[in-house]
Amino acid sequence: MNSSSIFNVDQLNTIRDAHLEWCAENSVDPKSPLGEEAAAFLIRAFDVEHNNLDRLVTALDRHIEERRSHVQIGSTSIPSKDEQ
Image (cartoon, rainbow, N blue to C red; front, side):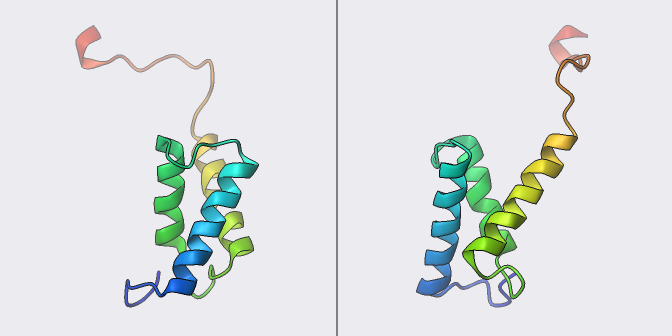
């Protein structure tokens, strides 16, 4: 994470460009809930190791894949409070 939690213009542009590139590559509307989640992840992920477009996009790809691995399509649904 950016230690000061304040980004300069170049850092913000890098985060924006990574967000737009990832969204375009994955056919995600940048303003959709998933697009907003991606932007939030990129802001949190930006640090010394994730400080350029390629590294940020790769980190986001790993995050989304990890998130996806916890969801099984076709599995039994979890009952909601209304169904109990």
